[in-house]
Image (cartoon, rainbow, N blue to C red; front, side, top):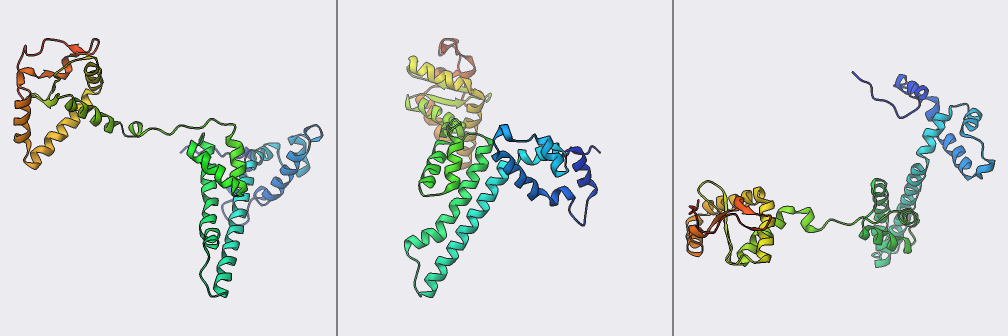
Length: 288
């Protein structure tokens, strides 16, 4: 069995592996001390700042262990500020409720916002901070931070300053998030042009377009590019029509609108010039 590598330096990780119960390892119990000294170390001007190795000797630990705490120091400070802000908001909310109860009245709208709505904003800011660690935020998320910063939320202001150094991420469009919807739209455009997309006896997609102008050729080229997905969508439609008992009715209307000799296989569409590979009507194709 391969043991997972610990993120801690080797000597401290070894202590942790053997310490399974009872008192915490010495370096864990001293974590607040390490963080406090590192905060002071960071605040010291760099020319006057001792090396991390020298600070480690002063504390009696390795510089690798201090480096481990230094790497997570900024994140730890943010989490501490978040917890402190949440606690202050909780205490303020309790005071507002208690005051309204003592005065035997309902909370005002302002009090309601401060007691109920405002505390949830701290959670939103923390969620955005975690998301910002994974990559740039979306434009609407940046706008929310600006609003909260103007309302006096220090965490929002701090996060906004950090995000100002990053690019704003573009939200995907509806079509990008739902590619199948785009194919449904393309298929419907064929019908809007008076055309037909159907399946023949062999399960191939066949089509007919009354006027193969430049727009129609461009449309059919897009459908050809996604012909396998289009085939599945049309097949699903045929299955639903059969389940609803409407298949023969729709089939008859298609045959009336576009006789089999006017239908051509989509696979044989010449996408280079977006023209038919052979003249329409050379071969008849039965409808499934």
